[in-house]
Structures are given as structure tokens and as C-alpha cells.
Image 1 (cartoon, rainbow, N blue to C red):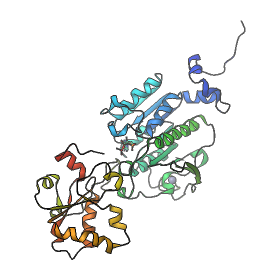
Image 2 (cartoon, rainbow, N blue to C red; image 1 turned 30 degrees about the vertical axis):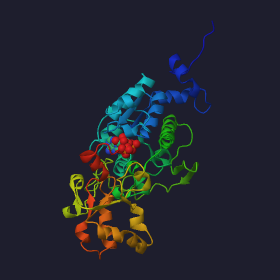
Image 3 (cartoon, protein in one colour; image 1 turned 180 degrees about the vertical axis):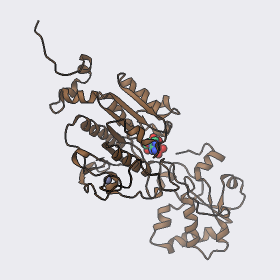
Length: 406
Ligand SMILES: Nc1ncnc2c1ncn2[C@@H]1O[C@H](COP(=O)(O)OP(=O)(O)OP(=O)(O)O)[C@@H](O)[C@H]1O
Ligand SMILES: [Zn+2]
């Protein structure tokens, strides 16, 4: 028998399991060994975190951390592929742990079923070699960015909406790359940022961007390839275009990674009235006499003219019989107010009550204000026009559970 040499620590079982990536010329046993002693943290086990978790659980890491404060909902299953019908209702981190451990039983999986805040993030982030931001709200993006800079961790960040996605690596120190704050020093108000639950998202778009996050994380951990630092990948699935743009450099004036940082020990708390979750913001623009509850509407005997201000695709899910469709875009941004007045005037004059409905009772409040501005001369317009508090969601919960929830 002839002796053989192996200058690495991989077992035969590991060689067999990872053989298809081991034999890539740029990868090899060295990269696999690096993975074996590496850890990654996935923040958010939703649309992006699901594919990222599946690939990172499969690739041969030593440790994978999973953070999420939410439970699996049926509406998650079209894209959050680490979860399935049997785990609806369970915590997302438990559901993801179950799937990941079935893929790779030798992986250490740490779960954090909590809402990440400026108070708890540092203790978690500091334990891992690379961090993946797979969350969906701006406050959390700043939180994760600041914690990664303070703990000197590379941050693989992606976001998706509709058919589109973006990907970049922040705070890649080896290349002196910028952090999120270098590009966007201040968080925009939460209500100005669109969310997937407002405008939708297609599953494979998350699959693409989440998988690419896992790829960048693997490259960072193994020191293989050219990292997407100082650059951003823009994906448009509708036209199927992928392009990369150059980002501005690290800024010496940055509040967290600059030369005189003001953020030093831990990320700052969020601006007053905002928090690090993705709950839709609740507007409160109207007085109580300008609003009616679902119960009021169900019991009302007044001749009502119902205006549905949702976009057409939502109307197509279900709508009230005989309601008038006036999408918010048209009400707010049309360039022919006179035509709109003419369309509405007769109905508004002849009905006792005008009820404006939307999905959750936010847009409807804006619509009440706008309608009053549009037709100030109509008798009793101030008393007549009301919005439905909580919109169709409240109608579903309080009056008719067969009205579909989305
Ligand atoms: N501060 C935070 N701490 C912990 N988890 C967070 C935080 N912010 C966001 N997340 C999680 O990040 C994930 C983002 O994924 P995604 O937007 O696909 O899911 P979702 O919130 O379930 O979607 P939908 O908006 O359709 O309900 C969510 O599971 C959410 O709970
Ligand atoms: Zn910075």
C-alpha cells in the first residue's frame, strides 16, 4: 500500500458532501476549510433570509445565527422558502432552524426570536464573522449598519420590491468600502418607504437576491473573488437586466465610520415615534367625526356613496358592490381636477353619506381631506364625507370574515 498526503482537516464525509465546490479551481480545500471555521448571521428569516439560510446551511459553515421576531404566516409561503405549511404559526427562527438542520445536521444553529434593537444588537453581531441584512425596514437597516461598523463586521445587504432588487456589501474594511450611512447619512421617514406588504414582491426575485447574498458571504469568508464593495448590483426582473453601479467612497464625515464619529459604543435609538419593525404606519389625520367604524357602516341605513381608493389590482381581489373606484394616484395626482369634480359632483350631492375605503384605513384619511378640498362648495361636505377606520381589514375582522384578507 502507498501512503498518501492530505494537508487539510476535512474528513472524508466532508470531502464527499462538498465535493462539487471543492473541485472548483478558485475554491478548493483551502476555501472549504475556511468555511469550516466560519460563522454567519442572518438577520430576518423572510423573503431574502430564506434562500440565504438554505445556501449558508448547505455550504459547510461551522455556525449559523438566525434572527427574527415574527411568526410564519400563510402569506409568507410564496417566497419565504425556508418555511412550509407545517410551520405556519411557529416562530420563523424555529421554522428555519428545522429546515436548515434537516439539510445539515453538523451545523451549529443559534436562534434569536427577538426584535433587534439598539440595546440588544451588539451582543449578537459581535459573535459572527459576516452579517446578512435580510430585513425589510429602514430603521433596522441603520441599526445593523451601525452595529457592523462598531463591531468591524462586513455586511451583505439586499433589498427587494416588486420585480426589483439591490445588493451590496457595506463596511468591507479590506477594500476600505463605505458603510450605509456614508451614502445615506439620515433615515428617511418610514412612511415614505414602500414595503412588500404595500406594493408586493415576486418570490423568485427574493430567491435571486437572497442567494446572491449567500454567495457574497461565502466569498467574504473564504477570501475568494472580488467582493461587491463600493458597488451596487441592480436587478430588474421585469426586463431581466442586471447592472452594477459605482458607489461613492467611504466618507470621512460619516457619523459612524468617519474620522470623528458621533456613534461610538452602540447604535443610536431610532427617531421618536419609530421602531425597528415593519408594521405599517398608522396615520391619524382626521377628527373622530370625520371617521366611521366598520360597525357604523354595517348598521348605517343612510344612502351611502362608497369610494374605493385602492389600486386596481387590489380592487380585483374583492370590492363592495356598487362602489366607485377612484385610485389614490388619480385623486392626488391627476392633471384634470375639473373632470374629476364633474364625475363626482352628482353622486356626492345626492347621497347622504360618502364613505371612503382603502385597505387599512391610512390612504382613506388622505382621501377625505383631498375630496373636501376638491369640492368645497357642496352642501354639508364636511359632515358627509367619512373614511372607514381600519379599511377592509377592519371590515374583515369586525363584520365579514369572508371578505378576503391580503
Ligand atoms: N428589527 C428586527 N428584528 C428582528 N427581525 C426583523 C426586524 N426587522 C425586520 N425583521 C424581519 O425581517 C423579515 C423581512 O422579511 P420579509 O419582508 O420578506 O417578511 P415579512 O415581514 O413577513 O413580510 P410581509 O411584509 O409580507 O408581512 C421579517 O421576517 C421580519 O420579521
Ligand atoms: Zn460610513
